Each structure stands twice: as C-alpha cells, then as structure tokens.
Amino acid sequence: MSDLHIRAAAPADLDAVLAFWTVAAEGISISDDSDGVARLLARDPESLLLAELDGELAGTVIAGFDGWRCHLYRLAVHPGHRRQGIGGALLAAAEERFVALGGRRGDAMVLDRNDLAQHAWRAAGYAPEPQWSRWVKHLVDGD
Image (tube, rainbow, N blue to C red; front, side, top):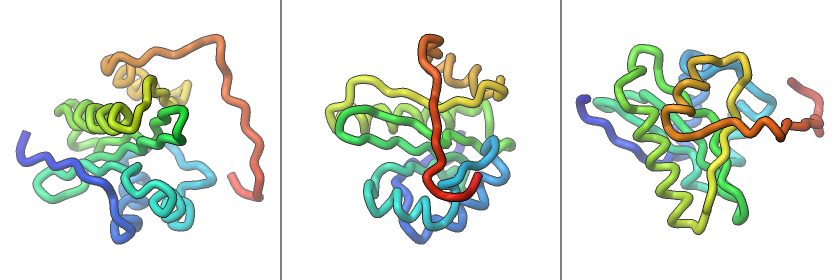
C-alpha cells in the first residue's frame, strides 16, 4: 500500500466525509448530515477516524466511547481501495483508542443485508450476537 495515514477528523473535513459516505457507505441515517457529524466531533473530537491514502480520503470509522461501551459505526472504504488493508488499519486504530480509554469490548452496527460488510467484520474477529436486536425510536422527524 502506498502512504496510508490515519488521523482524527477535524471540523473542516465534514463536507468531504459526507460526500465520501455517499460513495463508500451503505445507506444513511438520521444523523448523517453536517449538524450530526459536527455534534459528534464537538462531543468526542477523536471519535471519527479517517484513513488517507496518498493524501486522499480512502476510509472512515466512527469509534465512539461513552465511558462504558465502545461503539463502531460508519466503517467505510472507498470501492476503489477495498481489500488493501485499509478497513483493518482503521479498526486497529479504533481498537487502540478504545483500550487507551479503558474500553473492554467493541460492538459494531452492521446492516443485515450488507454481506460484504459482514465478511469484513468477521475477518476482523467480530461476530453477531443473535440474542440481541436493535430497537429504535426516532426522537425527531426524519429517516
């Protein structure tokens, strides 16, 4: 791989990240807008990790820690850069962050219909817990 660099996102990266997710991520949610990502960075400035390959955005992961649990969201790698270790490097950086913060277990949100993502998460050592289901209530109008 060329020059891969992983860093925390800054507010100036928000537009590029949102545009990247339209190409590299599967679907969007109610929080996937400038305000939502800005709130994430304001609350936890180190949570959104970016992988840059030769200076271009190639991947993202949100590594959120609430003081109790470690949550992973938006693991996305540009389609032209998949299967090169970028996702694994992002997950390793996220896991290192969690351990440094005192986290003991990471969990990931993975769409049931996204077979490619499920394969990537399994390859990284994650597994579904069939006894759990995600329950959601939208608190504001939106998706």
